[in-house]
Image (tube, helix red, strand yellow):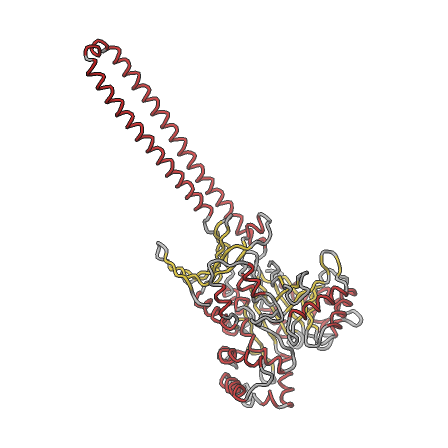
Length: 587
């Protein structure tokens, strides 16, 4: 995205507005329980940091640190050029964005020009205390197919929660029977319930396209319990054939130790293919940020009010004292008049003239005093309003969602296996789209926002025993050269000779260590015998993802339009139906 609007404040701090967006006020949502209501927001760069700022008409300005390194953030934003066309860029440069504008580009429809199709649809088996019937599941699947192009592949995530295991197994088997071959299934359960599912007769886990999924909340000083729980799960899963387990660990500060978690994952590379670290801030931590600031703001607001009350009291006292002085002066004047009656009678004409002049002067003085009082009162009212408005519109800090410290911590806790440079923005996954299609693994869309997180791929071969792909292959160079060709390749059924030559030269020039990668790597894509070796390598690789979610204090509607985790809404029964929700479930 291009930078817009550069401002300079009195302190000479340069503020650059990167783009407009919509966000949510957490005080309205959490403290006042108003639900999710969108407010105007923007992402700005200041002092080398990037902030997400929301403007709530009730609670004022709220800011969250998006990134502590603006150069890194701008580099991520440059990847959006491949995701956003000119229409999308113009939309987010508007002064004010409406939710209708967002829906116009985030609707998932068959004629979507932005290729913004979801990767994972979540379908709950149990919702509001009721089980989904087979008819409802069939209707949901048909709705998803209608929303996407005919050849588009996606993943259905079935959440078991507290559903009876035999019933859940039957529901999963039914969905598997009505789902086309190009799609995949994720079965999400807790680790102990997943063990029970694996022991069911004719378990859904015996299907090759089904991925068992475990979400585990890992807390500090509970690492040994976690290792024991996941160890039991792995022992049971190893009894089944062709199982690819997905492990998701939800992390929250203070972070737990991860060295043994990584060791367990790497030692079971034949069983565990995906390791996801999801970074979350709980409601408890967010409210800890909000409530103290809210109390402080109230106290300051009360102080300002008391200050103006005291000012009014002092002014009233001064007015009373001035009135008393005026009355005393008038009494003294009357006494002097009585004493000098004889003189006044003698000099009647002269005194009349003097009295008239004095009265005129007194009237003028009184008028001037009244005008001054009115002006002072108006000025005080203006100052009062300005002060109160400032108090209401003061910035509230909602902490940070900067992923870099987390990335640093995770790499340091990997037993020296991983470095920060081994991780790449999630949007770079789009380069694997044509290769998955080439190997018959599906026609997926990986148009994910670069702010959604980072990934790395661990390679296992006879020579390579768990090495990050970036050590042997220049991923950044390959992405820069290959990304512009993706749309061209996806449109045509056959790759032209010139395009194929470009891809070949790009692959060969991106190889870092030719001793570890075969020099005839291209032949592994064309030769059927060698292709089988490559397919086995792809099956044994491991993918590590660091997932940064949008919590209630940091929604960014621009990023939301490229969230790959979506939920089907009740009214999505036609091609123009909506797909709502996101990875954190708040929008």
